[in-house]
Amino acid sequence: MKKLALALCALADAGAAAAQSSVTMFGVVDAGFSYYRATSRSWGPTLPRQVTQSQKVLSSSGYNSSRFGFRGTEDLGGGLAASFWLEAPMANDSGASAISNFGRRSTVSLSGPFGELRLGRDYTASFWNDAVFDPFGVNGVGTNLIAVVNSNLAASRALATGGLLGGGLSAGTDSYLRTSNAVSYFLPPGLAGLYGQVQYALHENVEVSTVPGGPSERGRYAGGRLGWTDGKADVALGYGESTLASTTPGGEKIKSSNIGGSYDFGVVKVLGEWSRVRDVRDGTTALPARSTDRYDGLVAGVNVPVGPGIIRASFARVNFRNGNGLPDSDASVNKLALGYVHNLSKRTALYASVARIGIRNGHNNPTVMGVTPLVLSLPAILPQPAYVSTNGMEPRRSIGYDFGIRHAF
Image 1 (cartoon, one colour):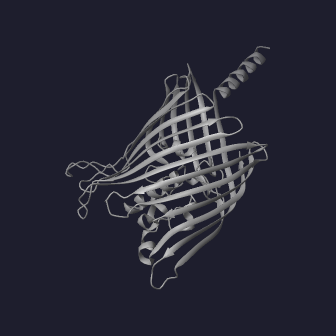
Image 2 (spheres, helix red, strand yellow):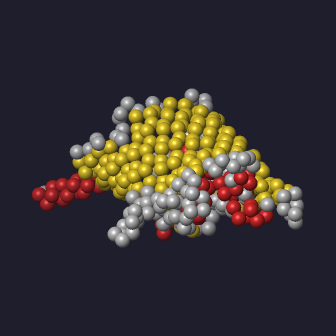
């Protein structure tokens, strides 16, 4: 009987230990058919007056980003918990990436009554509003223009200063979506609806004693986000600053400010965001003057529950202001998007989306506004300033749609 009692105690202890820690495997597999078409005006002597580009693809992440990951939490007692999160991007249309690259998120954290201290690669504080207050959740052809232009800008600057960082947009470029080497602090829950975070990413460049001015700060990011919600209403303010170069002359930073909000009326959820992104350059030997390109963005939309599904609609606009003061050098782009998600279960959904873009003076900012049908597609950004200047092309309008299935586990 004594041996039996000891065995039962051992089993009870094992069960308590298991209850104090957990590890979960999770993921999303999202695949669909997508079509993109862009029309550009040509003024080249050997080119037709109008050029149309189109593309049909089996796409990934049209509704939710495809991913695969592991996360776990251990209860340390006294309200403390240790957690880890490893999340990999996955191109399920080709089987690429998956656990060979935890570029979406790779963090370890300690949380308690004081809040959460999180270390590693994660979303930037300034990106969250672009995603949370977008009816389409920054996925597929419906992605709001604020996110598209920010992504194009970050990718183009990464290309211009030494190649894509971290393996492309899905892994993050120049600290727009995500940043590496980050130290983040999150406010604890239970503060009457108040939430927020501050974040700093180390540039990790080597300092050499014989090099004046210290190491390059390329890769440094600093930002924060502060918001309030009562369950129905939600409003948040975000700011981020990413260093591309710190030399003089030739320093460059991307500074992003945004404010977004939403309100759930039950029959409809209204969402909106205002954003301003500044590309601040201290000048180079060829262009010594300080200049600031500015991108002012606005998105407004709704999510309307209809039975087991949701109707999604949005309008977005971004205005580009050239910092060099050149005449007739600005540009603008508008976007209308409409979509429907039909939930077959809590984990499986069918979706369809369509979007149309109109561009004014696209030749003034080809890298950011886009010159191919891919301007509609967040996962596939392809800046082509050389293509525009060589062929005399000006993007005018673009349309795209996608429909597919998403399964989460």
